[in-house]
Length: 203
Image (tube, rainbow, N blue to C red; front, side, top):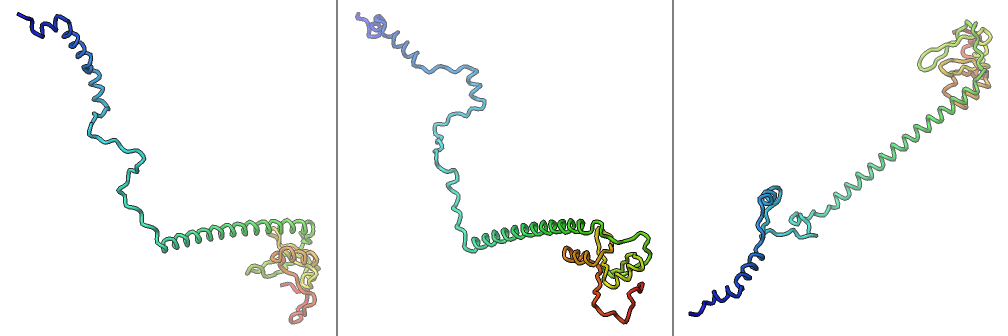
């Protein structure tokens, strides 16, 4: 009896060759460690998942922002103008304060130079010459002769460094040019006397 086709193929070795090729093309089996690692931090592959398309914005569904109205634009511009005006005003006030402080320091320096060694106050003076200053009655002590000179306008009273100084009329006029507020008293010699008050009157 003739051999079957299967027997003939087995004799030629063709069946074993086909089986071997089928084993080589089978995907390798995963080890236990690989299966555990896949369960940790790795997401299972989903063939139906769609890849995100690159270059497309994520918030396409957000409605577009409506354009600003003319009223909003005018209001924002007004706020900006006001802020700039306030900033410029503060800068101007700061510059003016700095300028005033500079001028005050210069006046003080000039007064120091002018009045250095020019005060005529005497330690043994006992006659008080009263005068109004700063809504109060102040006084400076002078000699009887100095009292007459102050009342005639030959001597002046100036304030410097918290003190009242007796100086000549010329120095008093220079003080008035530098800092008028520092000149406290300088009588006018050409002014008529009030009610015939004598120049040597102590008051």
